[in-house]
Image 1 (cartoon, rainbow, N blue to C red):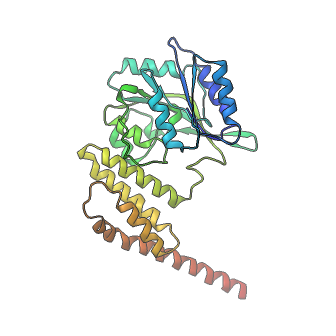
Image 2: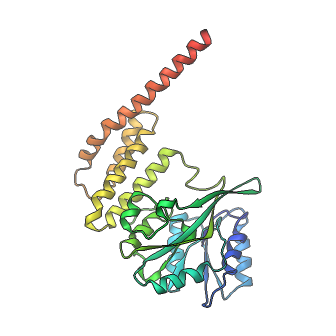
Image 3: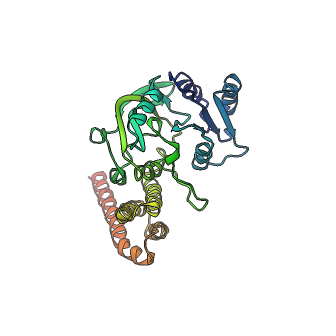
Length: 313
């Protein structure tokens, strides 16, 4: 479990783990990333109350979500790993038992996930937004499926620790959840799915990724895809790179002007691990980006002209 400034939610997250009903021991490893809202005091309380079940990683300074997650994963000692962030929670007390039984009976599976309820918390009230993933992904899946979309919710996952990809010091810091981890695991074996709700993903005012603008999200997705391409099997890297370039153009097209758009596009093109000529890819993609920006400005000018005409009328 990773947490940062989750004072309002962290107790529910921890309790949902401690209330799991299993016929095997579990250990909860919490990476507390130097919160400034009192979260640390809460996790320290649970660490004192459950010394044999809760183990704390208390960072002396804020390291960020991705490095915190890597530190927690490296500290896990069990045969299986289930992940949960401090603002989400598990809803089924048999979640871990169900998933261990599934993976034990399907040794070819790299990981499994379940239905996850999306909930929104605002002003102290929580409302349901429905279940994820979409119906088309409620089945066994593979690495090819994960190139097109990240349909797996972190709070619902369990995977084999022995199959966890090795992290290199040169790997980039990623901020799009764990999409790359699911993909790299799926290259080692199929992705199983349990058609039962076991977790809740919470949307609130301080979600790191959700509060980014559309073009900022596209830039983060492109970076993650280029990283996946760098680690991918040769039969898939070209498809992943094209998907990354698609999000690169979306990120650049969302900029306010052509110079900034060119800077963003060039920065992302340089991340492509499978091209020796990033300038070539840049020159190929740039005209489409500039045309998109021009069309947006023309539409804005047309709407402004129409609004002025209405005022004069």
